[in-house]
Length: 414
Ligand code: HEC
Ligand code: HEC
Image (cartoon, rainbow, N blue to C red; front, side, top):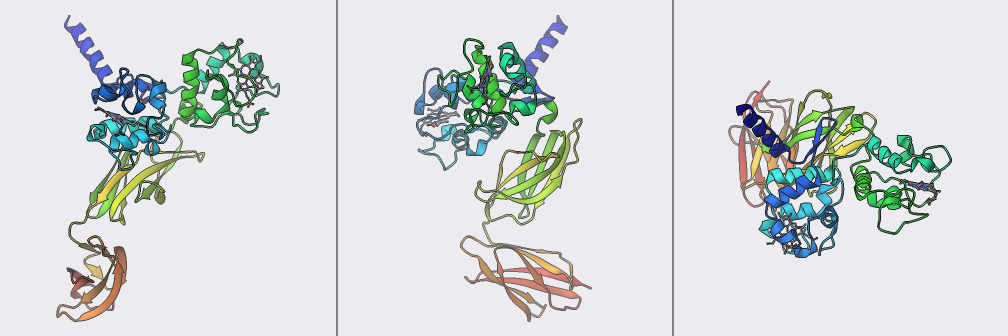
């Protein structure tokens, strides 16, 4: 009896931890049911489920969930959380089309789960891979016309199913647009909306697909049209950014890395238009987890958004979730390094003024207050070449245009 209770507790704990999550190639993915659970737990259902649809948006079904609501903004963009309206809503962003309300803000943990799920394609079911898709087609008679080299589209190879090297009868349309089922001819030809862009519907009398099968093909495309578990993207189990002494430290942990080449660290001060700031080589493998750190020494004043571009050896890539760290300056600050310095060193002077100030004078003073060097510096990082100095104590003085000043002692050694 005791054993049974133990087993039961274990089972309950296991399911409580992972919900309906699915595992593919050793990595956990969320399904739409997991997301519904999170929304239920946050009481979103009192306005957006069980037939209630405030703002015309409701998550009773995946179809309703992915539809655009009143605001006519794309609630979900598969593979791209930060541009999805749902993400704006649950982060309490200021980009909302109508007044945002505090009821919409989710906890970090829930946000992370939803963000990751959208970035992984926002699939309804467990992520299908190429073999599952071909099995569905085989079951539905598609092979009688699409598996031999008859000149028609053929799905017996991975390149073939993507529509490469085949005679595309609908030239205007790509057979598979990776990450976007709605733009893919393959999905257009089999879904049941009664309209096809060109040619005939393929979900006819010969080959009636079930709704579940159709949904799986859609999920396969939205989830990245992945070939096999060895082509699964690297799985990042955590990614954090935090401030330390006016620098921002990024740390991330990977669970599985298969064929990963490097991580490109990208930065933006607005959340859009990211720029590459560094590259970190992959040191991970498929069997163990690895941790990485990168220090951004010259962040901007205000908002700093980061994301990782995870590049595989074959050049394909994926983006991580986005992290935000705000650098707030209550009072102006100056950081001088190195200190002590050699007189041949270039001094790095980081100046973070209060809002509205961009320039100031930097002075190097000797212990008697005599000015040895003067130059204009700007907000952020500045480099100063020292005049020839004998060993001793000196001062760096920053005077801003409003009469404020900062003073820092620097020791010079030779
Ligand atoms: C008390 C009722 C209420 C609750 C609870 C609520 N919402 Fe809303 N929601 C609204 C209203 C009203 C709007 C439309 C106005 C707005 O955008 O602020 C809205 C808008 C939305 C939209 C935008 C739909 C569109 O028009 O495109 C989304 C997405 C959304 N809510 C998600 C959620 C989520 C997720 C939760 C749970 C964290 C939630 N809501 C909780 C009332 C609610
Ligand atoms: C009886 C033969 C036949 C069967 C069975 C059949 N197809 Fe087709 N399929 C065709 C023909 C002929 C075309 C080209 C004309 C057109 O696009 O309508 C075509 C075109 C297509 C295209 C467009 C290819 C391109 O790039 O132009 C796709 C995708 C497709 N079929 C998928 C399927 C799927 C999936 C199934 C099974 C559910 C299926 N077909 C079953 C004969 C068939």
